[in-house]
Image (cartoon, rainbow, N blue to C red; front, side, top):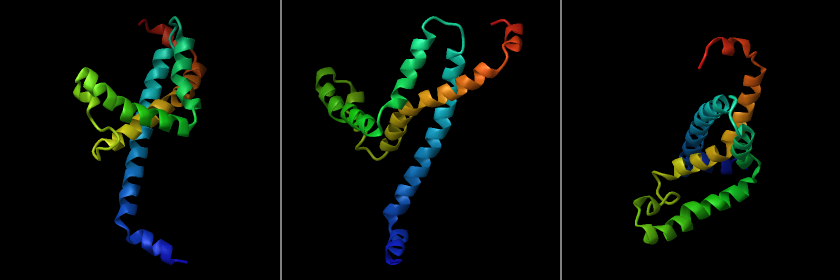
Length: 140
């Protein structure tokens, strides 16, 4: 029963998938934290419709992963190729999910779209605990 493990560690595709997973996780962690913090800073201010914007940004987080996968597979695949003849724009002719050099960034962008709202809520909770006295001492 160790034969399966021996075969896995001899397979080059295993190392390629591990590299893809590690790189996508690293990119997602960095960008989700940075964007979540910047959105939290922006939406912590007293602006009109900030609650609506918070809800819109958080909404993709509650979607099922399978549903998000199907939606973005349609948008990045079939929808893009249907728009290219109508518009002639090169951005619609790119194979976002079929080009090996772009698929990592496409997957990270989709997961970022889905998870940045969660990070924003966590940072918003932390920012709202901070007393506002020091912030009011410095005018905008």
